[in-house]
Length: 131
Image (tube, rainbow, N blue to C red):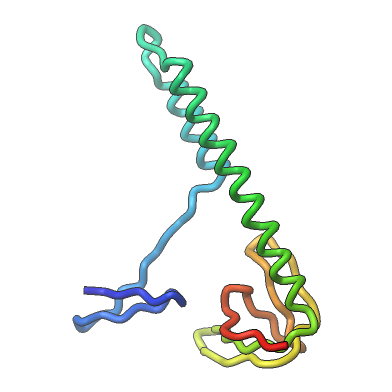
């Protein structure tokens, strides 16, 4: 039986380690599924308007939630400038600790990165923040 920690590492009671792999659906994935569904529906029994409207509402809610999450991460990152953090990073398979004052924040497609000197770590890899 595998148990996953908050940091994505896992422990296993057996001889092998199990690492969960997840892929989030993107807006493009959702639209592709919707187009496929609409193009393959039975013309004699088309999808009802209510179902289509419900799917579009779910899509809009998902898009709004994604934008809110990104904005929140950006605000959290900006609030760390000048603060001292302790965190960790894995580069080339090597785990290392990162400590120091946050000098800047990078907003990149793969997430918010915090700069401590020359090192960059993901916002989610911060373990402690001090004034």
